[in-house]
Amino acid sequence: MAKDKEKTLKTPYNNEDEIFEKIHSTFASVAASLGYNEVHGRILSALLIAEQPMSLNDLCKSTGYSPASVSLSLDLLELVGIVKKVKLRGDRKLYAKLEGDLLHGLRNALIFKLQKEIASTLLDLKSYEKNGKAKNAIIKMEREVKRLEEYVNRLSKVEIPKK
Image (cartoon, rainbow, N blue to C red; front, side):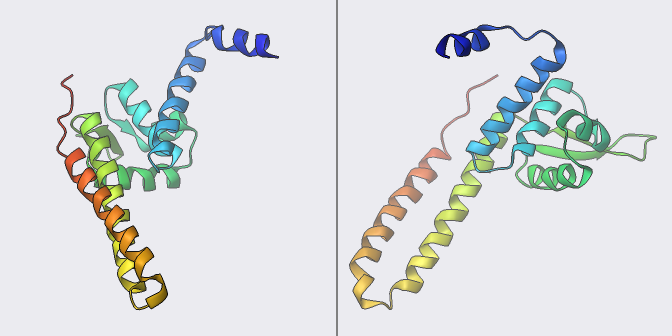
């Protein structure tokens, strides 16, 4: 079985569709590891490969997701500054394009998500303070979450490597 797995890993992809699917699935895995849906990664990889704005229909064909899923995902990607929705002159369709630097946008999305979770956790811990038995545990947890918050704040200032 291990030999079969080795052969599978070493086998080159035979056609362009297989290569693009591998690229899309890799980006989908990265997005999922950051706490986002796989569709976000597939949209980003499609736009990165296209190097030009893509219509909603083209993104649906490229990613394999429904218009509703792609549209909702584009809203989030636009909110965090990775994607911009645009209309092209003389065309009524809505298009999406990568906005700015991809790494910068991904860092912003990650930092935003972490900061939101930290703030929510700190609020939850404050609401538990009235329970006298859990006070010591709450103090310890709050201290660690604040350490994490400081780390995330420092991480947000790390410079992105130039292209």
